[in-house]
Image 1 (cartoon, rainbow, N blue to C red):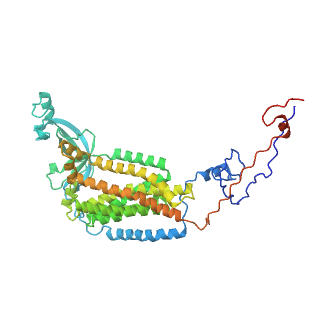
Image 2: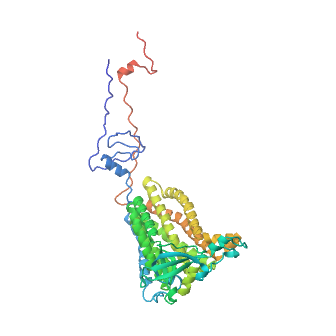
Image 3: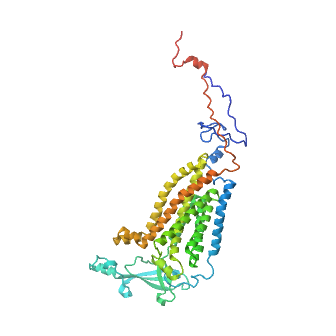
Length: 510
């Protein structure tokens, strides 16, 4: 039996690149390299297989670190725009920082939310007749009696249940009157009931009679809220890892700016619109650079957010004034205006529009800049027009979801109000023209216009920056060498050629 001859070795075997030598330029046409291709040979993805260990090669192919640094010229251009803006925000924080004698330094007024509150606990609850404690349940609207239809006479059992009230004994567990007890009466038509051992929040009115100084105003929700906050933080850290931790830090910074600067500055008499612009800009700068790093990509997102925020401010100021919206549409706003008459309520409405749109703006601008940078890394030869078109396809999908989210968020907040108009059977024009609903419509549409404009604006800025960037260490783009045809397969051995012809038929012996 004749042994099967082996094919001759290739004339020019591939050589392993020397340590530290740069990889050869990629081939003009990708070639498919089977598994086990020697290092230094062209591959399908990069035209060259790295000679490092498999772990290093895997890290090279899947590295998702920060964006590559841009050239010094582009860094200077971005700094020329952002440094004066950041300086202006810092100056605004210093000038508008609340200090001196504030409107709220005179002490609590004892009205509404301005009353001091303390923790308390329900020690006992008993059912008594409402007439024995001088409590009269309020009948529902329209004359409907409890337990029956309008005009119907309630039955004996329903009448008895309607006459029973809860008499709760509440003990104050905090403050100067710790250990003091008082009685709280809950009528049958009350939406909140009390139970023994329940933790509650009580308000104190110093000028009221002693028996009426304390009253239950809410339930203590510290435990469930703390557990929910802990669950939220745990999920963010588990999924986001380091970015999740930085996002939580940015959230703390946002609340700190809101509670330590924006709200006290407004109460101090500063213009709410100016305070919202300065405070929102500070939140934007700190959170974006903290969560996404100091890079050109983050700077482009900051620029896009800044321009869109200015557009929202201009449109909001125009249409709030044109629609004659006062902003004084609920009890809370009326109470604030009554306690602090110097606060400009219309400016407070516009400040709410700016701050409410800021979080969604950050999401849109960061997403678009990241999309442009990733597209550039995937295709370094792509032109700015191609990058812009590809990123805008992503942005259009984002626009549809973001606008819908913003509209539903405002609609959900105004759902009880919409139910009232539905019960009144008012027309769509009447409902939309009322100040209560018109305020939400203006807030939604102004924010949505800013969000939609931020997509092409940020995408264009990112495409211009990433296309104009040429770092000095990269040097000029190397010319693509012509395609080298792959070597022809080795010819079959002579013995095999002698046994089979071109047609594959066996020769007949002579």
